[in-house]
Image 1 (cartoon, rainbow, N blue to C red):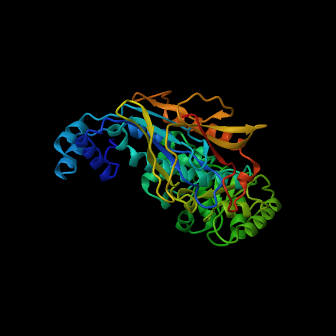
Image 2: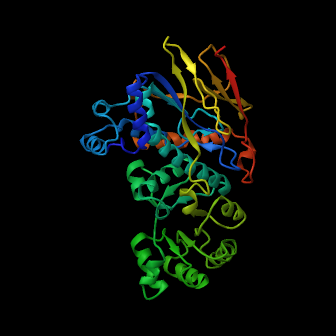
Image 3: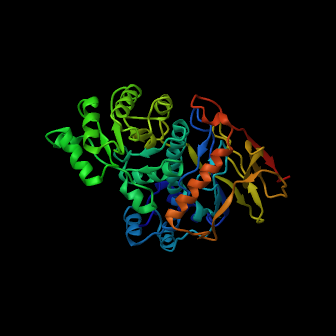
Length: 433
């Protein structure tokens, strides 16, 4: 499917005007970065890189897209003819998916002619802002869970396509599975699900509903025990499923108190291996608050798919360098109050001490640079072609592994949920002199 119209009107009017001024073929570099992290956050998580690369490859103007632009009189006829043959021919480099980032990290750099690169702004930002927001929230929840598994189950709380994208981002950040089947089909993410309250209410009794579920899904299933009375439901669940029943789920009430009562009841009934899963509007704070409760797994919905209060990561796409009439690179930047940024072509490394990150070093310029630390910038697209092209499933698996490594490098303070500054500072080195 074409992604060419997943964009803003002004991307094409800028292209049109630049064609008429003659500047459209100027070689440029655009950076994707965040001026600051969402309030109180100590790190960000890069997610959506694989989806963005796919979207760039699919950014083509077919007959339907061209007809719309023509009928709406959005661009001139010569620009319309140029768009008919558009394909991105430049380079994209940046952080690996799953990496953590900080203010001004050059998460993605797009190099090409102004015409090639400017039209990609909206589609790139829409993907990275959404997926990175979800991944950052998910990473905080994974930290709060302290090794206990989390399941993403927020499909009904976001758009239908955002749902599978959110499941992908949450899985990269450490969630163990999702309720969303499309995410399972596209990316091989484990899908999980049993029954809602409607299934219990359908039957004449809780015990009848439990029996039907166990007969269909086996004793390893998870039975929902809070439709009526939790204590009676747990008794019925063990009677039907036996002492090897997989799990029970609690979806309402004071979860900490209920979990302790249910654990004691399960143990008394001999179901000592039956796990307790809790759901019900969880976020990183409620998960952390259940740290001492006998909870074995968490199901998270609304909070994770909406970025836990920060539904967009605050990423921007800014022109930072262009070639002048002599063919030399010149730095350009926005300098308005509160929205300034560093110009110039950049790379970045993560400075380390004894295996722990100490700073994010951004290197500006194209001069010789000899530094230390872990390099953060890799090639994603070269001359219009994706590098290291693998399946969408492999991209997700690789990103998940990389995220685990990157999180392990952060100082211990990164797990604090209270408001604070970025866990490591951002520094700049300039090699352009």
